[in-house]
Length: 199
Image (cartoon, rainbow, N blue to C red; front, side, top):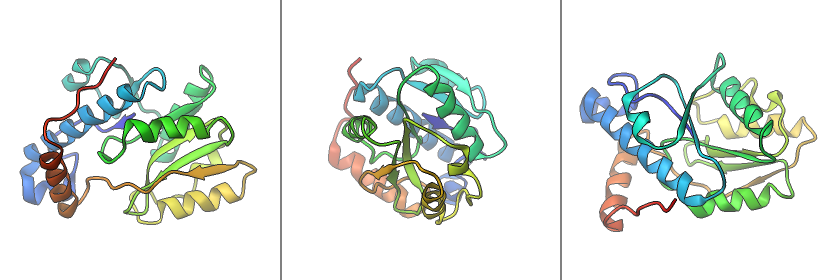
C-alpha cells in the first residue's frame, strides 16, 4: 500500500478549504487505516505500507513500513513492485485514498495475475487505484502526468509499447475533491459500523 504521511497542510490539499489542514490530515489517516484493513482482509499475502515519511500512525497499523524511493510517483511504484517481485511471484499495490476498493477486488487482481502480466483498477478521475504485476517494466510508468486526469490513458499507451499483457478491474472512485468527501461520508453512514478485518 502507498500512502503519504498524514501531515497537516501536506495531504488532501484540495479539501483543506472545507476541512482545514488538521481535518484533512485526520481524514487521510482514516483512509490509511481503512486501506490497511482492506488489504489485510483480502488475505492475498504479506501487507506492507510504503510511506513518504515516518509517522506515529504507522506504528499502530500492525504492518511492515518501508519508505518510498524514487524521483516521482512512477519511479516509486516501480521500485516497490520490483522489490516485491524479487520475493513473491505477484505483487499488488493500492493507494490509500480509494475506499471503494474491496478485499474482493484485491482477490480478483490476484486471480487475474495468474494469466496476465499487469492488472489495473481504473479510477473515475482518470487515474488508477490499484496496480498488480507479475512482470514489470519501468517504461510503464514513464512520461506520465501524475495527478492529472490522463494517468490511466498514458499508462495504457505505455503498456501498448511493451509486450506485457494487462487486464482492467472495475472502475472505482477515490477521495480527492469536496464531492468525493460527501460520497465518502454518505457511504460510511449507509454502511453503518466499519467492518473489522480478519487476520
